[in-house]
Image 1 (cartoon, helix red, strand yellow):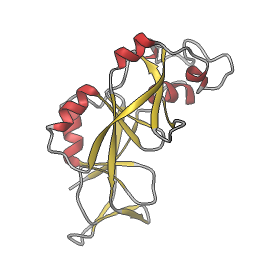
Image 2 (cartoon, rainbow, N blue to C red):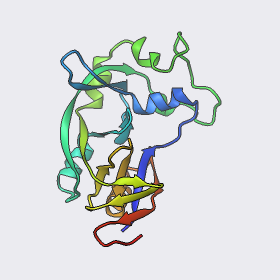
Image 3 (tube, rainbow, N blue to C red):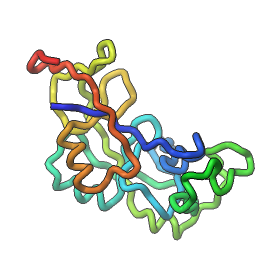
Length: 192
């Protein structure tokens, strides 16, 4: 079976585009994970932070009945949601439609005003708490189990099985994510 590293699509505008796509996952004063981002548009599935795989309500409902393995879905609290419709901007342009006044990408959110309307439109957000499995040995993924979604020990990346990739593609959920095939050492079967 093939396995793939998942990442967000490379965005135009460098760190500005990346922040607009992924938002930020942080810990609040109660040590609870929260998402702060733009809205009302929300990619249906994306990575925020290093490996927080975030999904919309609709995708959560589909995952609940998918039969895919290696994760538990947990509702995640929303922090500030700023009304910026970046998905309608000209992606072929060298610059975003506007920069934050400070010039820092995260200030799209920090300097922006929270919008209840954008937050309501975003709906509930869910984090996929991923199983840890495998580790890398000289750029090869060494596996003992076969989950559909997981994080390897010692490396902050999200990995999906070929089955999960096909499922995501069949549900048209790959507009904002990309896949990179990995070389796998299968410890269960002792093959490469």
